[in-house]
Length: 185
Ligand code: GAR
Image (cartoon, rainbow, N blue to C red; front, side, top):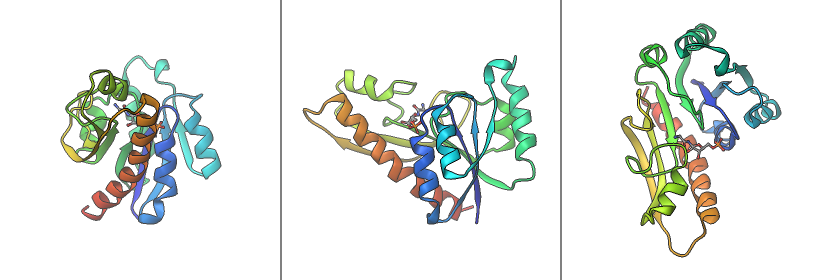
C-alpha cells in the first residue's frame, strides 16, 4: 500500500476524512502537526495514527524544522505529502526534497480568493460560484499548479450553510484525488 504523510495545523476534519477513506487504496503513515494543542492531534489519537509534533515558534528558521522532518521521514517511504489545513509555507528545503509530490487543498476556486479566509472572502465579494481546489504546492500562498477543482452555484444561502457544503465537498474530493495521484506514481 502506498504511504502518505498528512500535515495539518488545526481542526483536522480533512485529515479524518482522508484516514477514514484510506480503504480507497493508500495508507496514512503519519500526521505531522506544528501546533502542540491542535485538535487534529486528538483525532489522530482516536484514529490510531502516528504523530510527529513540533512547535514552529521554537525555531528561528523554517529550514531547520524542515530538515528535521526530512530526517524523520527518511526511511518511511512516503510517496506523497498531503497538506490539509497546514498553515505554514514550505521553504526550498522541503519543496526540493519532495519535488512534485506535495499537494494542498483550498476552499475556493483558485486563483480567486487565496489565503486564510477564502470562504468568507468569496462570500463577501458575492462570488457567483463557490468551490474547492486541489493543487501542487510551490513557494507561494495557494499558487501552485491546479490538479482539480469542483464548484457549485448558490443563492440565498448563509455563510454557515456554504461552509458546511464546502467542507463536505473537500471531504469527498480530497481522498479520491489522493488515490488518483498515487495510482499514476
Ligand atoms: C480546509 O477548509 C482547507 O481547505 C483550508 O483549511 C481548512 C482546514 O480544515 N486550507 C486553506 O485555507 C489553505 N490555504 P480542517 O482542519 O477541518 O481540515
